[in-house]
Length: 42
Length: 268
Image 1 (cartoon, rainbow over the protein chains, first blue to last red):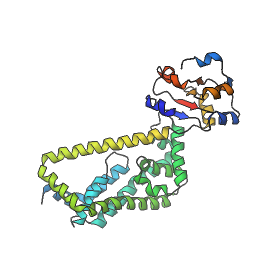
Image 2: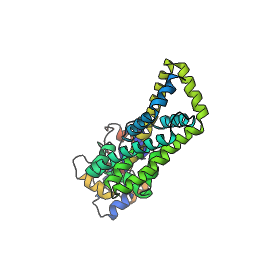
Image 3: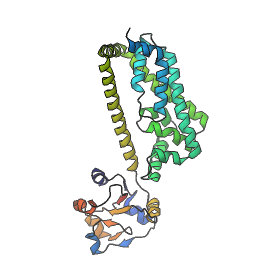
Image 4: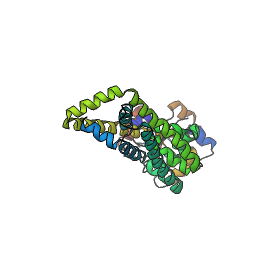
């Protein structure tokens, strides 16, 4: 996935170490995904 | 005796020293071809092998010492400059450090053989816990290994190298064009290696606490939730502000983004 972005010319792409699980275990904030978020453009 | 070889014989040791020094200081002037050529001339008895080796090691040490001391004095700032930091100092430096941690102090011994790393290793050692004395010792050993193998290569294949030199001197002016072209190609290859190395560094993973800190800053990275649809529906939460990405429609998500925008992605 990161590779796909690099291939599109983005220069600084970093995966989160440990993924979402690591974020949650660290006890950091999360928010609910609303349905609209799925259609939200970047 | 042709002029090229004459000049090399007269100035060879000095040229080799200057070349090694400039390369170690970070300029993209490859010293290996010069060393190979010098090694061949040494095998023919036209240059002193011991002198070449001594000058190469001394020049290499001088360059390394400069970077080491800059690293000691300015710490990570030097590394940041080296890592082209406009982008992301933390991860670049951290990643380089992890190479260092993984290979340990002895990384310095082979650093010269690794594109990119040879420039980063001395200031890194300087900014870290390595003392100057041991650094010089292992750096000298590394230089000896590196210059020694290039010189040995030249000495071993001196017959072939001599033929190339003969051919070049017969070509006259054309030789300069040829050498210039070879130099350009070499620099381009080196540049590409360096670019890849830095790109790899930038591909470093970002730890959660660093991301959390960055999200509080003005230039916060864009966060992409790239979990599978199944994972997203099993846990319909996200990192605050994250854009939930449908991988199959990636282009729609990113087509308007500036390429230098920092992106952090996460899966489960």
